[in-house]
Image 1 (cartoon, helix red, strand yellow):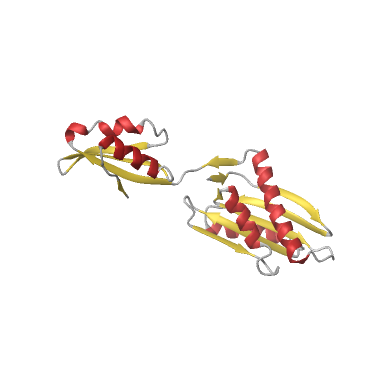
Image 2: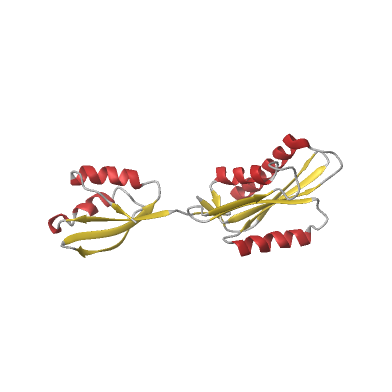
Length: 202
């Protein structure tokens, strides 16, 4: 996943409507509300301020608002673009000034989709992302004579971080964390290396 580190924008015209899309870092509800309120004040003459947002690593919450557009034509399509981009801790706001020509449901979906895609492309061009990982913690327990065995495996997982090691109920223990999605590979290799051993996941 990736997290936005600075605001960016993208503006285009769809028939007679002007669409301005802004992306803002927003790790929580307070930040989202603040960004949206500021844009509403600044562009108070706009017809709609539609929005979509995602929060957390891993994603813990998300939402979308059509702001008066026909249901499902604005916020939902915007959210799907953010999901596809693997973006988190941000809010996307599409500000539309109606120009007198109706876009229709299909046209609205295309316009709001294009708005967020354009803003994401701007963020890419300006290198406004940082990579973030959802981490999973686990522990391996082995007999004292095999305390070295987990470490002979960890080298194959460069993103794995050892948190602590010690003894528990007469067994050597090592706690670690690694990016989510790598658990199955680690379990498979540990099973082979330890001849059937398991991992305790937190």
